[in-house]
Amino acid sequence: MYNFKRNNLKILFLAMLLAIMCSLLCLTGCFSPNQSSTTVEKNEKETKSEPVQNLDEAKAAYIKYLKEHNYSEGQDARYNLIYIDDNDIPEIYVTGPSLADPNLTLLTCYNNTVTGLNVYGGNLANYSTIYYQERKGKFCTHGGRSGYNAHNIYTLEKGNINLEHEGDYLEINGKAVKDSYWKYDGENVSMSEYHQKVESDFDFTQSKYPYSKAWNDSTGAAGEKAVYYTFSELIDYLSK
Image (cartoon, rainbow, N blue to C red; front, side, top):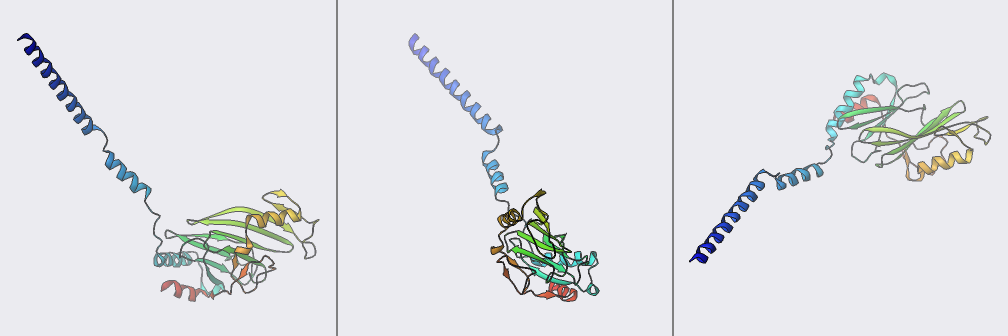
């Protein structure tokens, strides 16, 4: 009889202990972070895409920028559409008829914000050239006057234009010679080193330039016949 009661007490004790443990587990589950919810939030952050670039909105942003910065028909500028970064919104290359023209500019639009870069040169058919790797986000300008010449290599990503490398040199009597001044990324270099560095940092053979004949071009880049717009023609195109 004593053993029977003792066994019953053991069973009752074990049952109570099991009930307490179950209660503690339930409470822990209620107050712990929701793992499923956390996972969903994490996945949403990971899969959050870049803002969709709307062509019509970008065109409107270009029109607003051009007008706010006093571009007009009377400036005799030419406008060319090229594709440098990896979206379907073109960049606008603006060039004028003279070396002193202040409108020599590259415009790009990202997320309806227009960024402009003043590019050294002048009448691009004769004095300066822009080379660009289409839809790869990289371009190089090359131009000069009065014996001074420069290469500037840029990247373009999400509306940001970044100068990656810059070089400059002097021509003597209209020719580039070994004994001339050669500098690349702030360091004095030889003529051969200069060209090696430029061609290493920018692949001209995979590039285009928007002219039927580029200035002093021997790079192997592909010439592309330019379609130039006047200011009114450009506004008409952007308004469609």
